[in-house]
Image (tube, rainbow, N blue to C red; front, side, top):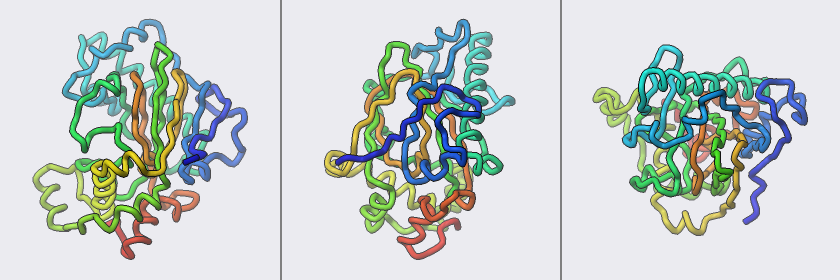
Length: 295
């Protein structure tokens, strides 16, 4: 299969104005399921921060180190108070620069974007052992069973920090509409009483909507189908060390095959604020199921 999944821009600034970017912004391109790739946009480490390019800063029980705002401690990190404060400052700077980037690239989203968590992944992808459901080397859309979005879009900024020149290797799969049409017939129906119970027991951070249910089903059904993983339409892309890319990770099927040392920033966007709301997962799933799903 040949997929034009990467749209490449020769840009090296985190703050507008940007060279080579259409004046109207890139909302249409990212909503179409493209990965917006900036091979020359690197995150500059300050004096002493190179030492954080090591695995021992991360708790092996956690998938990543997480920065959750100025009033919250780092999660998943190990080290003394001074080291953790400096690592926290590094992640806070990445969050600020990522916000400047998306505000400049997507001017029509700017009033509506909400910043989520900042993550730092130190682990080598190829060495990570986990369950099939958490195995990110399998093609998947991002959907989180314990943290329902209620239909909000997941816009993500990724930067490859690898100091040894190793790329981040992704497989990118078929368009979301094709993926949903393929697996939706196998999905269990939503259970409102179950969603109520999961919230009351504290197993989800909020009430799981029908949308969250179906997105979780698509995530799991795709990962569990090994024939689909091997033979479905897909292409492999290499995202260079020192590069940055931006994608709606709830729409673009992806699998992370190789790499180490990654920064990631999440932003939330209500699908009503898309330039083309019909292009998003919520509208596609509502069309396929014939019912509203934000309940």
